Image 1: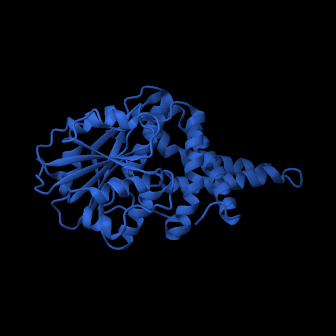
Image 2: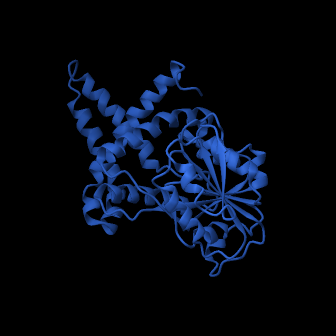
Image 3: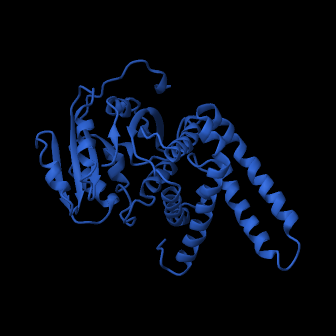
Length: 338
């Protein structure tokens, strides 16, 4: 298996690294510096696809030599369109994507390329890490690592996040890239990887291809992030209904916790009409039991985060449950196009 290789297998093809940017003035400089400081010795270009920024992002990018960083100006149409614009102008045979608020580890580029000598590899998923010390950020990172643990169990995955993604250009363009109907960061990356996986293309996960990212630092920010993603997940699942039950990235227990939260809410609303208290207690107990595997895992890594994991999972589930319900209603009323 390619992950067992001890040394990097060099790629002789041209590589294009594409960074979509919209009002990214606070982060784009650090991102580009990290991409220029890679320990990869082969040829690669860096393309910043400016999605109609108005905050000075362009001026910051233009400080870098044109021979090292190429700027493409695009109208504001969202990250999917920006990435596609960058891909169309790319000279590389391999396309790598990261986000303007990410800092690439020095080995990121080499690690993203590591699987590609395998001719049957169409795409690669890298990994998030964070340098934040706040409890909320640590909990968010542990949640992501739970998902990565699932990906590691699969020789071929169906979920590639665009913050650390790589594709063979010919295959990427054959699928017309990311669906530009997603006008915000709202599911365009799993939509593409679902389609590729369904078509029989092999996508793999390399946890050593690391970018550093800033997670929500407060509970309210985390809740809003999950709520937003759940609303748009409705649209994604409408396009890929078979993924409602199972896919490589989302833990199975989370898909059990959400219906349990609906059952608890239904029992609570039924209290004025009949004694639903036993049903509420049973549902809450079962929900708590579903939090124990992640709690045990987190306790081994971070004691304080582990102790708070049941509460954290409850907040996450509430955000997803409300977001999915809202997304479904928006879809029914035509305000969330499917």
